[in-house]
Amino acid sequence: MSDQLLQEIIEKSRRGDEPAFSQLVRRHQTYVFALALRLLCDEHDAEEIVQQTFIRVWQNLQRYKPEQKFTTWLYRIATNLCLDRLRVRSRDAARVSSLDQGGVRGDVPDPRGMEEAHSNRELAAIVYRLTSQLPEKQRLVFVLRDLQELSIEEVVAVTGMSVGSIKTNLCYARQRIREILRRQFHVSEA
Amino acid sequence: MECERYRPLLYLYKHGELSERAQRRLEVHVSSCPRCSRERQAIETMGHALNRLHSFEPAPEDPQGLTARVMAGVRAPIMPHAPGRVRGIVDWLSAVARPRPVRLAAASVAVLLLGTFLYQLALTVDQVSQLEEKMAERAAPAVRPTVEYSVRIEDARQVVDIDWVRRLAGILPAIRRDGLLVVNGVTVMELKEYLERSSLSRSPAASLPGMEPDAIDRLLRFLQSHAEVNISLGVEGV
Image (cartoon, each protein chain N blue to C red):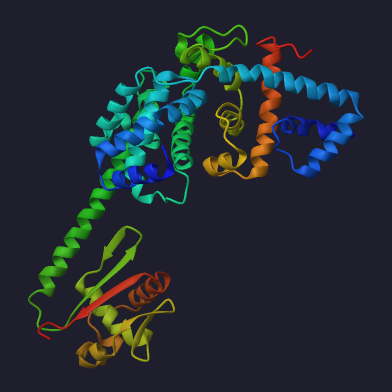
């Protein structure tokens, strides 16, 4: 989708054109889903985040500034919703416990090695094992930068963090993930 | 010592996240340090392992169904689709409501606090409404000049009844400067014309019925501490 076409669709959506907005959703929902799945490691939650994100986009399209990249704005909304969800989870000790015991949502087996994922659930289980023990900021920058492959500038725009803070958190996150890969996934560094 | 300084930078090296200067210095160090060279290789191996995660691109299982659910939510947002913060509160309340003694106790306290808050809120709104009605009743049939005085503090609104208004009018000369009402250093509106017509303006403050010096002081302090003051004046029949 060209930038011009995207802006036209956004403009139509701003005026309340539901078919145009539906087109916008179809075009970007996979993006949001992938981000949410990698952050939340749960398919069901990721789909809910997709819904919440686009409802919020629909309600706030008037505030969107065309000079800003749409996907960055979208990512920012989705990321904030994911962080809210993670905070709710961290308050719910029972749920965290069930995740720890049985993997994601309790019914996904623990990945034994760093094999390629073939499904959302397998990927979620691997990412969960890798990132669930990271502090929030480290988890966020690792997912955005290393798994979603956003540029540092995009991570700045999405998270509102400084470049220095992002690099510091990336550094710590990668160190810890290296340890996890070695100890839990038995990745040999030789 | 040198190695400790450079080691964290190795995690940013492969991704091109270092400044040119830092990268050059790191390369110089790594080329002469076998330990850091091995470390760099190990970090690269980690990168290769993580690359496997990119071989699968996650996607919703039923994209059309998901779009349809999004659009249904857009047309009629309901609680499960509420924003994260709201959802968070809902989740928290659900967690609290689980039948465990501590949580039940916490829920009871929360309900009690919420009830008290709502009661106070209703009371305040009710009081304000009563004051407004009272003011309207007294102001409507009056032949004398009418003055309405309201102070807006964020979303709260306090309405002072007509007796307070008379007291305010009585003390206006004290806070009047060149015919302008000055509150907290901000000129609110010109009152000169009104004060010249109003019999109240000629009354010495102390002679107004029912006025107490403490009340005047309180009112003055109140006015001086709130810049956002709206005073509307009118003379009936003019």
